[in-house]
Amino acid sequence: MKATIHSSVLVMLIVVLSGLHACTAETDNYAGKTIFVYVGRPPGSGADLAVRAFVRYWQKHIPGQPTMVVKNVPGGGGSRVWNLAWDKNNSNDLEIFFSPVSATAVIVRQEGLRADLSKMPLIGSLMSPNMTFARTDRLEKAEDLPGVKGLQFGGQAPAHRFSILGRLTLDILGVEYRNVTGFRGASDVFNAVRRGEVDIQTAPLNFYRFTVEPSVVKSGEVIPLWYNPVIDEDGEIVPLDAAGDIPSFIDYYEAIKGEPPSGELYEIFLWLLPKLNGITYAAFLPPESQGQLLEVLRDSFNRVTEDEEYRTEEAKMFGFNLPVVSSEQGTRIIEDMANAPEPVRDFLNRYIQQGR
Image (cartoon, rainbow, N blue to C red; front, side):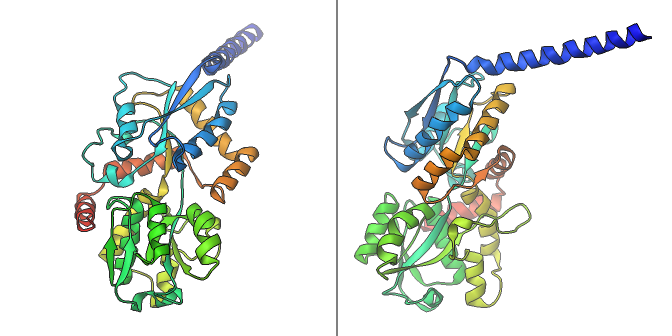
Protein backbone atom coordinates (compact mmCIF):
# COMPACT_ATOMS: atom_id res chain seq x y z
CA MET A 1 0.00 0.00 0.00
CA LYS A 2 2.79 2.42 0.91
CA ALA A 3 4.58 1.72 -2.35
CA THR A 4 1.37 2.47 -4.26
CA ILE A 5 0.86 5.78 -2.44
CA HIS A 6 4.46 6.82 -2.99
CA SER A 7 4.21 5.96 -6.69
CA SER A 8 1.03 8.00 -7.07
CA VAL A 9 2.58 11.00 -5.36
CA LEU A 10 5.66 10.70 -7.55
CA VAL A 11 3.55 10.61 -10.71
CA MET A 12 1.58 13.67 -9.60
CA LEU A 13 4.78 15.54 -8.78
CA ILE A 14 6.23 14.75 -12.19
CA VAL A 15 3.06 16.02 -13.91
CA VAL A 16 3.05 19.27 -11.91
CA LEU A 17 6.75 19.91 -12.50
CA SER A 18 6.38 19.14 -16.19
CA GLY A 19 3.52 21.61 -16.42
CA LEU A 20 5.51 24.31 -14.64
CA HIS A 21 8.49 23.65 -16.89
CA ALA A 22 6.33 23.87 -20.02
CA CYS A 23 4.70 27.10 -18.82
CA THR A 24 8.06 28.65 -17.94
CA ALA A 25 9.57 27.57 -21.25
CA GLU A 26 6.63 29.00 -23.18
CA THR A 27 6.60 32.36 -21.42
CA ASP A 28 10.41 32.56 -21.59
CA ASN A 29 10.05 32.42 -25.37
CA TYR A 30 9.80 36.23 -25.22
CA ALA A 31 13.41 36.53 -24.01
CA GLY A 32 15.50 38.05 -26.77
CA LYS A 33 12.43 38.55 -29.00
CA THR A 34 11.04 41.73 -30.54
CA ILE A 35 7.32 42.49 -30.31
CA PHE A 36 5.99 45.03 -32.79
CA VAL A 37 3.15 47.25 -31.53
CA TYR A 38 1.04 48.96 -34.20
CA VAL A 39 -0.91 52.15 -33.53
CA GLY A 40 -3.34 53.57 -36.08
CA ARG A 41 -2.42 57.21 -35.57
CA PRO A 42 0.48 59.35 -36.84
CA PRO A 43 3.67 59.93 -34.83
CA GLY A 44 3.29 62.63 -32.17
CA SER A 45 -0.50 62.30 -31.94
CA GLY A 46 -2.16 61.89 -28.55
CA ALA A 47 -2.83 58.19 -29.16
CA ASP A 48 0.72 57.61 -30.34
CA LEU A 49 2.20 59.24 -27.23
CA ALA A 50 -0.17 57.31 -24.94
CA VAL A 51 0.69 53.95 -26.52
CA ARG A 52 4.44 54.65 -26.47
CA ALA A 53 4.29 55.59 -22.78
CA PHE A 54 2.41 52.36 -22.00
CA VAL A 55 4.81 50.21 -24.04
CA ARG A 56 7.87 51.52 -22.19
CA TYR A 57 6.51 49.91 -19.02
CA TRP A 58 4.83 46.93 -20.67
CA GLN A 59 8.07 45.35 -21.85
CA LYS A 60 9.33 45.34 -18.25
CA HIS A 61 6.34 43.27 -17.09
CA ILE A 62 6.43 40.61 -19.83
CA PRO A 63 8.46 37.53 -18.80
CA GLY A 64 11.75 37.61 -20.69
CA GLN A 65 11.47 41.40 -21.10
CA PRO A 66 11.33 41.46 -24.92
CA THR A 67 12.11 44.54 -26.98
CA MET A 68 8.89 46.32 -28.01
CA VAL A 69 8.91 48.56 -31.08
CA VAL A 70 6.00 50.88 -31.88
CA LYS A 71 5.05 51.29 -35.54
CA ASN A 72 2.55 53.85 -36.85
CA VAL A 73 -0.12 52.75 -39.33
CA PRO A 74 -2.41 55.78 -39.77
CA GLY A 75 -5.12 55.96 -42.39
CA GLY A 76 -8.67 54.97 -43.15
CA GLY A 77 -10.02 56.95 -40.22
CA GLY A 78 -8.24 54.51 -37.91
CA SER A 79 -9.43 51.38 -39.80
CA ARG A 80 -6.18 50.63 -41.61
CA VAL A 81 -4.40 49.27 -38.52
CA TRP A 82 -7.30 46.90 -37.74
CA ASN A 83 -7.45 45.68 -41.34
CA LEU A 84 -3.72 44.97 -41.14
CA ALA A 85 -4.32 42.82 -38.05
CA TRP A 86 -7.29 41.06 -39.67
CA ASP A 87 -5.24 40.12 -42.73
CA LYS A 88 -2.72 38.16 -40.66
CA ASN A 89 -3.17 34.53 -41.65
CA ASN A 90 -1.67 32.77 -38.65
CA SER A 91 -1.57 32.87 -34.87
CA ASN A 92 0.95 35.50 -33.84
CA ASP A 93 1.97 36.84 -30.43
CA LEU A 94 4.86 39.00 -31.67
CA GLU A 95 2.57 41.61 -33.24
CA ILE A 96 0.17 43.63 -31.07
CA PHE A 97 -2.35 46.13 -32.41
CA PHE A 98 -2.88 48.86 -29.80
CA SER A 99 -4.95 51.77 -31.01
CA PRO A 100 -8.14 53.79 -30.52
CA VAL A 101 -11.29 51.85 -31.39
CA SER A 102 -14.15 53.51 -33.27
CA ALA A 103 -17.20 51.85 -31.77
CA THR A 104 -19.38 53.61 -34.32
CA ALA A 105 -17.45 52.06 -37.22
CA VAL A 106 -17.88 48.60 -35.71
CA ILE A 107 -21.58 49.05 -34.92
CA VAL A 108 -22.62 50.38 -38.34
CA ARG A 109 -20.14 48.08 -40.15
CA GLN A 110 -18.49 51.05 -41.74
CA GLU A 111 -17.34 50.62 -45.30
CA GLY A 112 -13.59 50.18 -45.37
CA LEU A 113 -13.39 48.33 -42.05
CA ARG A 114 -12.88 44.67 -43.00
CA ALA A 115 -11.72 43.57 -39.56
CA ASP A 116 -14.13 41.82 -37.21
CA LEU A 117 -12.74 42.86 -33.83
CA SER A 118 -15.01 40.36 -32.07
CA LYS A 119 -12.92 37.56 -33.61
CA MET A 120 -9.59 39.03 -32.46
CA PRO A 121 -8.31 38.24 -28.93
CA LEU A 122 -8.45 41.33 -26.73
CA ILE A 123 -5.46 41.75 -24.42
CA GLY A 124 -6.71 44.77 -22.51
CA SER A 125 -8.10 48.26 -22.91
CA LEU A 126 -8.31 51.70 -21.35
CA MET A 127 -11.16 54.21 -21.22
CA SER A 128 -10.72 57.92 -21.94
CA PRO A 129 -13.73 59.86 -20.55
CA ASN A 130 -15.26 62.86 -22.30
CA MET A 131 -17.34 65.86 -21.28
CA THR A 132 -19.28 68.84 -22.67
CA PHE A 133 -18.74 72.56 -22.05
CA ALA A 134 -20.24 75.82 -23.35
CA ARG A 135 -19.46 79.53 -23.79
CA THR A 136 -20.77 81.81 -21.07
CA ASP A 137 -21.75 84.61 -23.45
CA ARG A 138 -24.63 82.30 -24.50
CA LEU A 139 -25.53 80.91 -21.07
CA GLU A 140 -24.38 82.28 -17.72
CA LYS A 141 -25.17 79.13 -15.77
CA ALA A 142 -25.25 75.47 -16.77
CA GLU A 143 -28.94 75.22 -15.93
CA ASP A 144 -29.76 77.93 -18.51
CA LEU A 145 -28.94 75.62 -21.44
CA PRO A 146 -32.40 74.20 -22.30
CA GLY A 147 -33.90 77.69 -22.72
CA VAL A 148 -31.22 79.15 -25.01
CA LYS A 149 -32.08 79.32 -28.72
CA GLY A 150 -29.84 79.10 -31.76
CA LEU A 151 -26.78 77.51 -30.18
CA GLN A 152 -24.02 76.11 -32.39
CA PHE A 153 -22.57 72.71 -31.54
CA GLY A 154 -19.07 72.09 -32.87
CA GLY A 155 -18.45 68.50 -33.94
CA GLN A 156 -15.74 66.46 -35.59
CA ALA A 157 -16.63 63.84 -38.22
CA PRO A 158 -20.35 62.96 -38.02
CA ALA A 159 -19.53 59.39 -36.97
CA HIS A 160 -17.05 60.45 -34.28
CA ARG A 161 -18.13 59.48 -30.77
CA PHE A 162 -17.83 63.08 -29.51
CA SER A 163 -20.18 64.23 -32.28
CA ILE A 164 -22.65 61.41 -31.62
CA LEU A 165 -22.67 61.82 -27.83
CA GLY A 166 -22.73 65.61 -27.99
CA ARG A 167 -25.71 65.71 -30.33
CA LEU A 168 -27.59 62.94 -28.53
CA THR A 169 -27.39 64.64 -25.15
CA LEU A 170 -28.57 67.95 -26.61
CA ASP A 171 -31.43 66.17 -28.41
CA ILE A 172 -32.49 64.32 -25.25
CA LEU A 173 -32.58 67.65 -23.41
CA GLY A 174 -34.62 69.20 -26.23
CA VAL A 175 -32.05 71.95 -26.89
CA GLU A 176 -32.45 74.00 -30.06
CA TYR A 177 -29.09 74.03 -31.81
CA ARG A 178 -27.31 73.89 -35.15
CA ASN A 179 -24.72 71.19 -35.81
CA VAL A 180 -21.44 72.54 -37.22
CA THR A 181 -19.45 69.51 -38.36
CA GLY A 182 -16.19 68.60 -40.07
CA PHE A 183 -13.57 69.83 -37.62
CA ARG A 184 -10.43 67.66 -37.80
CA GLY A 185 -9.89 67.33 -34.07
CA ALA A 186 -10.71 68.57 -30.58
CA SER A 187 -8.18 71.39 -30.86
CA ASP A 188 -9.81 72.72 -34.04
CA VAL A 189 -13.25 72.69 -32.42
CA PHE A 190 -11.86 74.42 -29.34
CA ASN A 191 -10.25 77.16 -31.43
CA ALA A 192 -13.68 77.77 -33.00
CA VAL A 193 -15.15 77.96 -29.48
CA ARG A 194 -12.57 80.56 -28.50
CA ARG A 195 -13.33 82.60 -31.63
CA GLY A 196 -17.06 82.47 -30.85
CA GLU A 197 -17.86 80.49 -34.01
CA VAL A 198 -19.41 77.62 -32.03
CA ASP A 199 -20.88 77.61 -28.54
CA ILE A 200 -20.74 74.02 -27.29
CA GLN A 201 -18.15 71.24 -27.56
CA THR A 202 -17.81 67.63 -26.39
CA ALA A 203 -14.16 66.74 -25.86
CA PRO A 204 -11.84 64.38 -23.96
CA LEU A 205 -11.77 65.04 -20.23
CA ASN A 206 -7.96 65.26 -20.27
CA PHE A 207 -8.18 67.93 -23.02
CA TYR A 208 -10.58 69.86 -20.82
CA ARG A 209 -8.31 69.56 -17.77
CA PHE A 210 -5.10 70.57 -19.56
CA THR A 211 -6.31 73.01 -22.21
CA VAL A 212 -9.80 74.32 -21.54
CA GLU A 213 -9.91 74.60 -17.75
CA PRO A 214 -6.65 76.56 -17.23
CA SER A 215 -7.53 79.08 -19.95
CA VAL A 216 -11.15 79.87 -20.78
CA VAL A 217 -12.76 78.30 -17.70
CA LYS A 218 -10.38 80.20 -15.47
CA SER A 219 -11.16 83.43 -17.37
CA GLY A 220 -14.93 82.80 -17.10
CA GLU A 221 -15.49 82.42 -20.86
CA VAL A 222 -16.54 78.76 -20.64
CA ILE A 223 -18.36 76.58 -18.08
CA PRO A 224 -18.51 72.78 -17.82
CA LEU A 225 -21.91 71.17 -18.31
CA TRP A 226 -21.59 67.40 -17.82
CA TYR A 227 -19.49 64.34 -18.51
CA ASN A 228 -20.75 61.33 -20.44
CA PRO A 229 -20.62 58.37 -18.07
CA VAL A 230 -20.01 54.68 -18.54
CA ILE A 231 -22.92 52.43 -17.61
CA ASP A 232 -22.25 48.97 -16.20
CA GLU A 233 -24.15 45.76 -17.03
CA ASP A 234 -26.75 46.59 -14.38
CA GLY A 235 -27.44 50.01 -15.87
CA GLU A 236 -25.67 51.84 -13.05
CA ILE A 237 -23.31 54.79 -13.55
CA VAL A 238 -19.68 53.81 -13.04
CA PRO A 239 -18.16 56.39 -10.64
CA LEU A 240 -15.56 58.64 -12.28
CA ASP A 241 -13.37 60.36 -9.72
CA ALA A 242 -11.52 62.25 -12.46
CA ALA A 243 -14.68 64.24 -13.24
CA GLY A 244 -14.50 66.00 -9.88
CA ASP A 245 -17.56 68.18 -9.33
CA ILE A 246 -18.75 67.96 -12.96
CA PRO A 247 -22.05 66.02 -12.96
CA SER A 248 -22.79 63.09 -15.24
CA PHE A 249 -25.25 63.83 -18.03
CA ILE A 250 -27.88 61.75 -16.25
CA ASP A 251 -27.44 63.71 -13.01
CA TYR A 252 -27.46 67.00 -14.95
CA TYR A 253 -30.74 66.05 -16.67
CA GLU A 254 -32.40 65.14 -13.37
CA ALA A 255 -31.26 68.41 -11.79
CA ILE A 256 -32.63 70.46 -14.72
CA LYS A 257 -35.83 68.54 -15.45
CA GLY A 258 -36.68 67.28 -11.97
CA GLU A 259 -37.03 63.70 -13.17
CA PRO A 260 -34.82 60.98 -14.71
CA PRO A 261 -34.40 61.01 -18.51
CA SER A 262 -36.58 58.59 -20.46
CA GLY A 263 -37.85 57.83 -23.96
CA GLU A 264 -36.65 56.00 -27.05
CA LEU A 265 -33.74 58.36 -27.73
CA TYR A 266 -32.52 57.97 -24.17
CA GLU A 267 -32.75 54.17 -24.36
CA ILE A 268 -30.53 54.23 -27.45
CA PHE A 269 -28.15 56.58 -25.63
CA LEU A 270 -27.96 54.10 -22.72
CA TRP A 271 -27.21 51.23 -25.12
CA LEU A 272 -24.50 53.24 -26.86
CA LEU A 273 -22.75 54.55 -23.74
CA PRO A 274 -20.81 51.38 -22.77
CA LYS A 275 -19.78 50.91 -26.41
CA LEU A 276 -18.79 54.46 -27.31
CA ASN A 277 -17.31 55.21 -23.88
CA GLY A 278 -16.34 51.78 -22.55
CA ILE A 279 -13.28 51.22 -24.72
CA THR A 280 -10.93 53.88 -26.08
CA TYR A 281 -7.43 52.44 -26.37
CA ALA A 282 -7.50 48.68 -27.00
CA ALA A 283 -4.73 46.11 -27.53
CA PHE A 284 -5.50 43.07 -29.70
CA LEU A 285 -3.65 40.09 -31.15
CA PRO A 286 -4.37 38.91 -34.71
CA PRO A 287 -7.20 36.37 -35.19
CA GLU A 288 -6.63 32.81 -33.96
CA SER A 289 -3.97 33.86 -31.44
CA GLN A 290 -4.75 31.97 -28.24
CA GLY A 291 -3.07 29.96 -25.50
CA GLN A 292 -0.76 30.60 -22.59
CA LEU A 293 1.05 33.53 -24.18
CA LEU A 294 -2.22 35.44 -24.59
CA GLU A 295 -2.80 35.09 -20.86
CA VAL A 296 0.78 36.24 -20.21
CA LEU A 297 0.15 39.38 -22.25
CA ARG A 298 -3.15 40.02 -20.47
CA ASP A 299 -1.52 39.62 -17.07
CA SER A 300 1.39 41.90 -17.99
CA PHE A 301 -1.02 44.52 -19.40
CA ASN A 302 -2.83 44.60 -16.05
CA ARG A 303 0.48 44.82 -14.19
CA VAL A 304 1.36 47.97 -16.14
CA THR A 305 -1.87 49.65 -15.04
CA GLU A 306 -0.90 48.89 -11.42
CA ASP A 307 2.72 50.06 -11.81
CA GLU A 308 3.11 53.19 -9.67
CA GLU A 309 5.78 54.69 -11.94
CA TYR A 310 3.52 54.25 -14.96
CA ARG A 311 0.49 55.62 -13.10
CA THR A 312 2.50 58.71 -12.17
CA GLU A 313 3.52 59.29 -15.79
CA GLU A 314 -0.02 58.57 -17.02
CA ALA A 315 -1.47 61.07 -14.55
CA LYS A 316 0.95 63.72 -15.79
CA MET A 317 -0.03 62.97 -19.39
CA PHE A 318 -3.83 62.86 -18.92
CA GLY A 319 -4.37 64.71 -15.66
CA PHE A 320 -5.71 61.50 -14.10
CA ASN A 321 -5.37 57.74 -14.47
CA LEU A 322 -7.39 56.20 -17.28
CA PRO A 323 -9.97 53.66 -16.06
CA VAL A 324 -8.96 50.09 -16.92
CA VAL A 325 -11.33 47.73 -18.75
CA SER A 326 -10.74 44.01 -18.14
CA SER A 327 -10.28 41.69 -21.10
CA GLU A 328 -13.51 39.89 -20.13
CA GLN A 329 -15.59 43.07 -19.95
CA GLY A 330 -13.93 44.51 -23.05
CA THR A 331 -14.59 41.34 -25.03
CA ARG A 332 -18.29 41.52 -24.12
CA ILE A 333 -18.41 45.17 -25.22
CA ILE A 334 -16.74 44.36 -28.54
CA GLU A 335 -19.14 41.47 -29.15
CA ASP A 336 -22.10 43.77 -28.41
CA MET A 337 -20.75 46.30 -30.92
CA ALA A 338 -20.32 43.66 -33.64
CA ASN A 339 -23.79 42.22 -32.99
CA ALA A 340 -25.71 45.45 -32.48
CA PRO A 341 -29.52 45.14 -32.83
CA GLU A 342 -30.69 46.16 -36.28
CA PRO A 343 -32.88 49.02 -34.93
CA VAL A 344 -29.83 50.53 -33.20
CA ARG A 345 -27.66 50.10 -36.30
CA ASP A 346 -30.35 51.65 -38.51
CA PHE A 347 -30.83 54.56 -36.12
CA LEU A 348 -27.10 55.24 -35.92
CA ASN A 349 -26.72 55.17 -39.70
CA ARG A 350 -29.56 57.69 -40.06
CA TYR A 351 -28.23 59.84 -37.23
CA ILE A 352 -24.78 60.01 -38.82
CA GLN A 353 -26.31 61.01 -42.15
CA GLN A 354 -28.38 63.72 -40.48
CA GLY A 355 -25.18 65.10 -38.94
CA ARG A 356 -23.45 65.61 -42.28
